[in-house]
Amino acid sequence: MMCSRRTNMNLESLKSLQSRVRKATGPDRELDWLIAQAFLPPDKKFGLKKAYCTRFTTYPEGLGACVGLMMEVLPGWTRVVDASAPELGVAVELLPPDDAPPALQAAKIKGDHDLETHAHLEAIFAATIAQLEARETVG
Image (cartoon, rainbow, N blue to C red; front, side, top):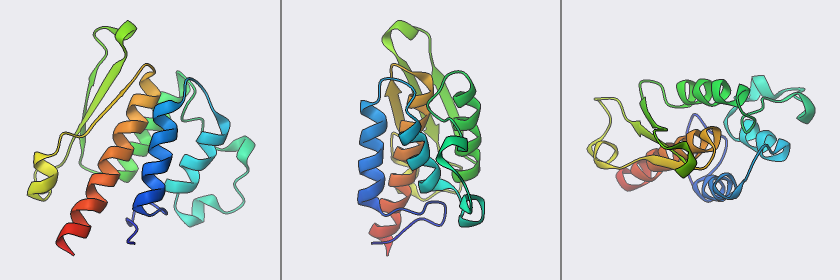
């Protein structure tokens, strides 16, 4: 099982964590911790305490953290946010850079959730998983 250079997890672990994000209904410090462990480089994790890790799942401060995570993990990607009817949830679509492989260009990479932070996280996981699957297909 191959790991992305921008994640510390394999495909199955990422899918499992993505499922937890999808099922979450609000702020979750355990989930914040697991997301940090999945994506932070080892030098940034050294000495990191659960109580002090980034709050990805807390609105509104988590929104900036999610966008920052997207920029770190998915450089060159663009996000399109549809919050036109927030009572129906928020959709975040991520578009790969122009030089991405055709399989990624054709993929519909999206996160849908009642919470904007969680929709961003779902999309980040979907894009990371799509990259790993594309590499496994090629490799």
